[in-house]
Amino acid sequence: MAVPEATAHARSLYRRVLRELPPRTQALSSRSSPRSALHNSIRTHFSTPLKDSSSEYTLARRQETEQFIQYLKAQRVYGTLLERYNPGAWMDEEERVRLTARRVGMDLPVEYEWKPNQ
Image (cartoon, rainbow, N blue to C red; front, side):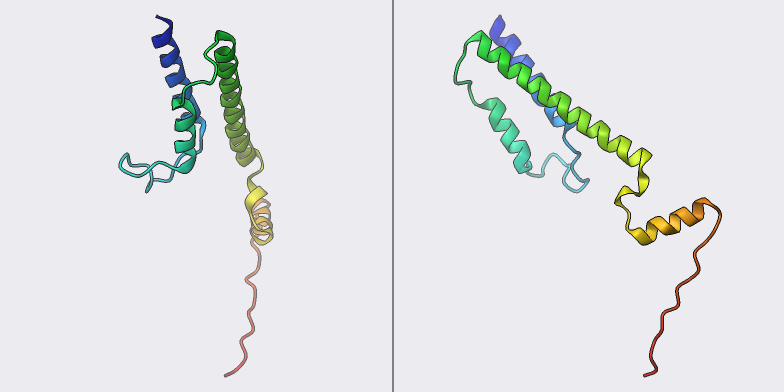
């Protein structure tokens, strides 16, 4: 009875790890597209039999995987919060200045580009 339960728990952990990974792009998200290298690596890690089948080793591996899932979840939430509360973090300087001016009700003047006569 313990073996099917362990297999179901391992499958659950595998799905939880995949759920926490960054989403694939729409073009790659169809089921017919090949898996990414990371996905293949994780699948191989979960499908290979354990070196030691003792209950202590199995429990340690489960706990390690649970910690990894918590880490991935924390990183995902951190990225979401960073985007929400620091929206200018990934903008270039010019765009950041333009948006700051818009925030206080001003528009930046259009820059003049000098073109020599040809």
